[in-house]
Length: 222
Image (cartoon, rainbow, N blue to C red):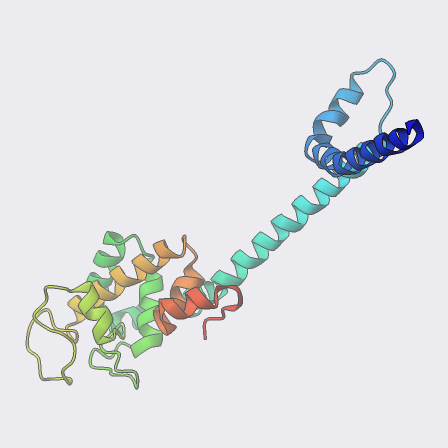
């Protein structure tokens, strides 16, 4: 009976030790910097190899995490930087679109968006054609769909469902100022929605925010 009880006690102690080990290693991993510092102040300076390994592992993981974050951030913004860099508008190019520059500057400042990004987006979306209509029925300088236009202008007279030249309201989707105002506001909302990631915002502007939400880990802005 006594031997059986002793074996049972040893078994329980073994189980307890096995359960404690992972927690002990985790605590060593978390507090390894402090343990190394404390070793430096001991009279008999003796460094625990397990603590050194835990600290090295922590540094390695931290560097990998940092590198991953940098890579993701750069990949998300690659298209945005390309847009801005490729635009590189000369005085002549700006002069051609001078009629829109005041509205772009005003609404970019109002909605905290880089005006060069708005210029580049308009250049890509419509080539500064105020009457442009895409195959997806996106309209105007910033190529807004009727649903997006209505979302940005819930009380507007124009619903953006008409053809070009058929609306003469100053707040029409084909009116440069109104279109730039709505498009810049929409872009600003997307940048905020995706925590400042301009790459995500541009993809959502082009393909729809729902598409980006469902494929955020493998996005590429076309």
